[in-house]
Image (cartoon, rainbow, N blue to C red; front, side, top):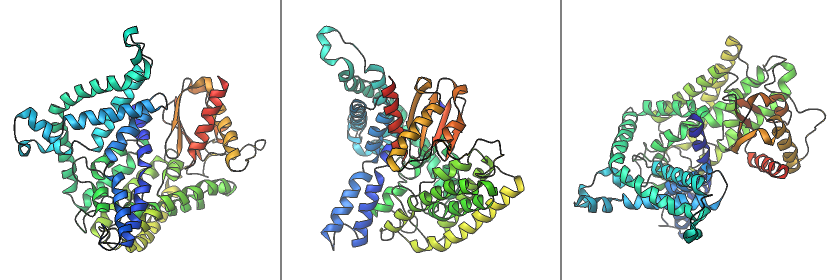
Length: 488
């Protein structure tokens, strides 16, 4: 079950990758015209409307992205199936449709159906589309229905399954929506403290890949909070909207970078060079783009206690920023790019304050990380035992090549370290990692994998292996896939 939930989390990275486009367009539009909608500039209106085309359809993107990510094959058929499922469920459970079923006025329909086009339903539709694809993609229909054999029947089956799901949701969705609403309201009613609780759990759930479910409640329009959408569309409450995003900026741009510096300073002298290459690359990704996984996974499993401290400090940052008169927003993550783009967003409040707050957060991270590493002798990058294989330099007989050429070498070494193509049961990738499920965990050679020069390797279970590559993980994945296909 946990593996399935993690795979869903990875699938959501595909539609999430669309958000930077919206962020850039919103940023340009509001920079030109802070009032928005082109009262002073048609160019601003064009950019803002273009960005809203993505933000307003996030649930639909989730439906398509989840169906592709959860499918056994990278094919267009599951994407179509996910779209069919989304259209069926949202149409059958729209306010007007439910009013017709009830024989009542639209105003008498439970409010839950007015929120049916949300991220949760998008993910559900994607799962239905992918499941139908995986189950029926090889179906052989009778001769008189031969046209609908194989992948052609997937969308048809998905339509029927989605209709049945809509019938079930007619009774279930108001209950689910009510529970989500109560959960969100209970956190929201805590004000800044609630923002801190959310921030802490957001980081704490990353190792399990379950943080996306929490994000759907607070960032998107699942229960009406929609912090991200309201911040960029200007429909929120000035000084309040953005409280579930702002506190991430000091952590991702400053705190984690300072924590990485502390880990580098505490590394063993003979391992500082290797630690520096890992931590410097991760720090740049965190500061510039807000992608923190390379840094977080470098110590998450080596020193879980330190990671829990990081989650707690994130919660504190979220609480403090929610109290302060500062509000920033992001479309992808809380890095420098989104910070700059949010300066003239209509809901932005004193975004410049992120710098002084960030400096304080950086000092705290450095001091706390240094203290914890020394006090508990934590095995952060560069502090492993001499016989520890957690992080070793590339093998001398396999030097790195330049740029793209190196990914072929890297993929070959990783594949060999995983026990070869015949030992791979399943593998895919997310923002920074290749995630592989192997048949025989004893065949995995972590030292061999790390000799490819990857930042880290983690094992959630005996057969579940994660190889941390970085933001260019797709190139290593593509090369691995090509090598596997060539070996058949």
